[in-house]
Length: 258
Image (tube, rainbow, N blue to C red; front, side, top):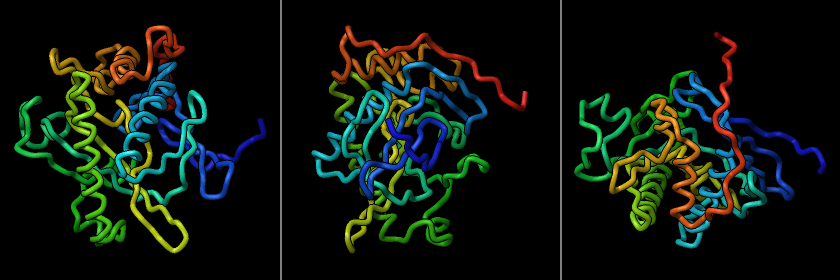
């Protein structure tokens, strides 16, 4: 295979140049990170599961008319995607109290919110992705008011679709984080859903038992991360019992700062 040019490497993915202009290859790593990589392990097989789950979700969003960067899955770890200009804002939609919302507002974890709440976070690892307002976003030129409206509308549509999708397989969508980008086609620009949607970016609880099936298992040292992701994939019909992801479990990655 010819050597590809690496465009960008993040905590969980590597982006390579694509086979055609305007395309990229998104490679899913096995890295599990939390607290902006202050906690880091390699969980063999995690990237395969996230690739398959994200493919499943993005393909369905495309069919629903929700615009995304996704074109197709290339292999077990890679996707072909459209090249977009990523907006440096993470959009979080919360349906149930969990995580930082509980810490900030003193709400008990598991409390169903009066309505879905949208929050914005500035993508800056060195600042721990601070929460920002619409005023910050427009003042610093990260997005204009019309783009913010599009971002919020897309986030709510994705949240509504995923809530129903997961409910159908006995899973509650507690919250989700999405990234969005500007897709330029000819003289047109539109906002599309980008990055990934997987148990790395969603809180997913079993409806019957409230068991966590997401990255909180890693954040909270609960163990069973790969098994939880596999459970999500199996319930969605992506995997069957004869197709386990290859992996022997977590491998500790020592920090250079230790």
